Image (cartoon, rainbow, N blue to C red):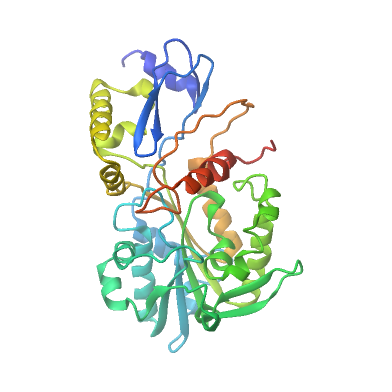
Length: 395
C-alpha cells in the first residue's frame, strides 16, 4: 500500500470547508457564461459541496417499489379501478439546473405510472404540467421532459399546461384559518385521484408546495409569495422557521383534506458535469495537468465567442445527474423521506460567521432555462437564493 499523499491528507483534514493559505491554488468561479480564476486572501474559508452520492442501481425498480410500498397509505394499484378519473400533475423544468440528461426522471416515472393506470382499466387520464405562474414550456421542452412516446400519444389534448389565468379551469376549495384562499386546477380537483410527480431539491419544492403552488392561480400564490411573508421566512432552506413554508403547509393540508393526493417524489445527486467539463466537479487542489489545460482552453474559447454562442453552449450541455431516492404516498411522510436523502447530499455543516461572502454567479436560474439571466434574475439569485442557502441558523 502506498503512503498517504499530500492530496490524501488534504482531503482527510479538509472535509467540506478549506481555509486558504499561501500555497492554496486560485479558485475557479462562475461568472455568468464565463469563469474567473482568482487568488483569495489568506484565511478565506472556501465551502465545497459534498461528493456526489451514488445513484440508485435500478431507478425503474425503485419507482415500482415506492408505488407498491408508499408512505402512509395503501399501494397505488389498490387505489385504482376501471372508469375512475385520474389527473397526473408533473413539475416543470425549472429544476434541476442544468437540465438532466435524458431520460429525465419525470419521463421514467410517467411511463411506469401510465402503464399501471392502463393495466388497471383507467382510461380517463390527463397529464397537467404544474407551471403555476411560470412561462409555458415549448413543445420541444415538453417532448424532452416526457420522452417521444408520451409526447406523441398525449400532447396537447391530454398532456398540457396548467392555466393559472383561466377562471373556468380553477376551483376554490376553501380558505385556511389564516384567511389564505385555496385555489387549484379544476381538472385536478374533480378527479377521483390526483398523482403528483415531483423532482425535489431540498425544501425548494415538493411536499405541500407541489399542488398548492404548482396548480394554483395568482390568488393562491399571493398568500405566501409576497414581501411581508418572505421577510418573515429567515431562510427558504429552513422550513421550521419559514413563514412562507407555514403558509404553504396550511394550504396543502386543506387540499389533502379535500382531495385524494398521491405523491411520487424523487431526488438526484449533485453530479452536474462530466466529460470535457469534469474539472468543474473537482477542488482546485485535485486538478491534474489535463484539468488545467481543459480549464484554460475553455476560458480562451469563451473569451473569443459572442455572448449568444456562449449561452447556447452552456445550455446545450445537460447534467449527468443520478437519481438517489424515490418515495411515494401521502404528502408529509413522503416529503420527509425524500428530504432525508436531499439533505444527505446537499447540506454542508458550516459552524462560523463570515463578514464577507463571495458567490460565483452562474449562467442559469430556475427562471431562465434556455434563456438569458437578466439583471433582475441576477438579484434574485444573489440576494434571494444564494444568500439564503442556509438553515438551523439565524443571522
